[in-house]
View 1 (cartoon, one colour):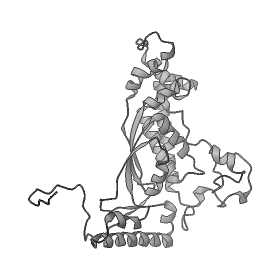
View 2 (cartoon, one colour; view 1 turned 90 degrees about the vertical axis):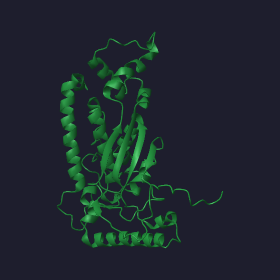
View 3 (cartoon, one colour; view 1 turned 180 degrees about the vertical axis):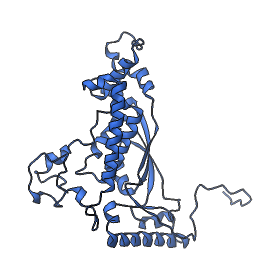
View 4 (cartoon, one colour; view 1 turned 60 degrees about the horizontal axis):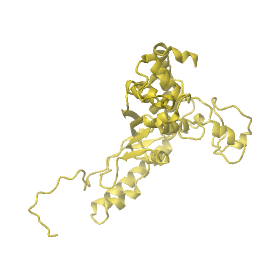
Length: 321
C-alpha cells in the first residue's frame, strides 16, 4: 500500500526514550514487593452456589438448599477447603492478583505454574532507562559487593541506551543486555485450587528463595482478608517436607541447615552447601542485623493471628478443627 503522510499519525502507547539519561533506584527486593487481590468472588457469592454444587450428587433438583442458615453455608465452604467435600468446587473460584516489585528471576518460577493466565509489563517497545533495580538484603549488607552490583546494572543500562539511541539496533535486541534484577509487575489469574498449590509450594523456606516465600505469604494474606474462614488450612511454618525427605538421599537441593520449622531429622553438617541456616547468610556486614525477611514473616504471623481471632468469633465451628 502507498505511504500517505497526510494521515494523522497514530498515538503510540510507548516511546524509545531516545537520548534520555539512565536513572536507577536500588531497592531492597523484599521491601518493594506488593501483592493485591484485584478480582475475586465474594464470600456471599461462594455461599450462594457452592453448597448446592458439592451436594448435587444426591439432589433431586439443582437448587435444593435454599433454607440453609448463613453459618451452615460457611461450614460447607470450610469443609470444601478441608478436602471433606467435592474438591472440583475449588476450580470454580477464580482469583486475579497483581504482583508488583518482582524481577524476572522470580518470573521464571511463576511461569512454571502452567495453569495460570499471565499479563506482563513487557520490554519490547517500552523504555527501561528509568526502571528500578531490586537488591537482596544480604547484598545491601555488603558494601563492597553492592557498589559492584550498582555499577554492573548501570553499565548494562547505559549500553542498552546507547544501542537504542544509535537507531541502528532495535530495542528488541538491545534489551538482552539488561540484568534480571530490574523491577517489574505481573497480573496473575488462576483458580483457587491452583493458587493454593502455588502458595503451599512457595512457602518452603529451605528450597525456595525469600522473594517466593514473601509473595506466597502476601497472596495468602490477601485470600484470608476475603475469606477469613480459611485461616487454618495453610500453616506458613509447616515443615519443608520435600527438603526433609530428600536431604539424606543425595538427590535434593541441600543449600542450608534446617531452620527451626524443619529441624526434624538427623544430618551431617557436610550434607549442605552452606554450613549455616539461610537466615545466617546476611551479608558481609549483616551479623546481628534483623533481616527484612524476618521482619516480614513476623508481620505476616501477626496479621494471620488477628484474622484467626476474628474468624473464631464469626465461625465458632473453626474451634473444633
